[in-house]
Image 1 (tube, rainbow, N blue to C red):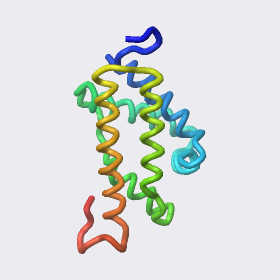
Image 2 (cartoon, helix red, strand yellow; image 1 turned 90 degrees about the vertical axis):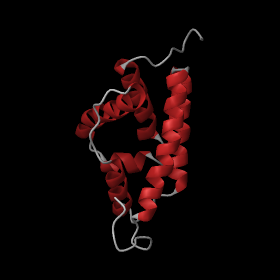
Image 3 (tube, rainbow, N blue to C red; image 1 turned 180 degrees about the vertical axis):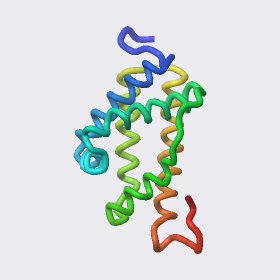
Image 4 (tube, rainbow, N blue to C red; image 1 turned 135 degrees about the vertical axis):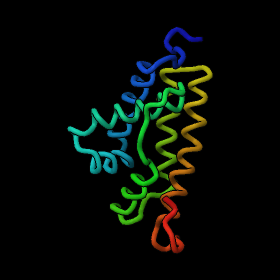
Length: 141
């Protein structure tokens, strides 16, 4: 293990990762405008806590997260006139991987990358299936 990086071990580590990552997201040329237009400044602390819950559940198996990410992402896509594309998720993944690599290494860091890769694919498919031109008689979500 390098001198600067450590392994992800607890909620504090996940919180550090989530906060560092979303600082980057909010400044990103492609993603910043989307996130900043859908989450007001005063909503960010609660949103970051919820995301920390999500990743704590995902990485450490602590059952804290409650929510419906697919519904939220589909609503954002609807608000943006159905313009979210794979490039948005690719940028999100690149920033996630870069943030993890800067801060952490080890098994849970690798798990965070693989989980994010699967989630990005799943969220994009959920968005795509919920677009009016792609929906069947019933909603996927």
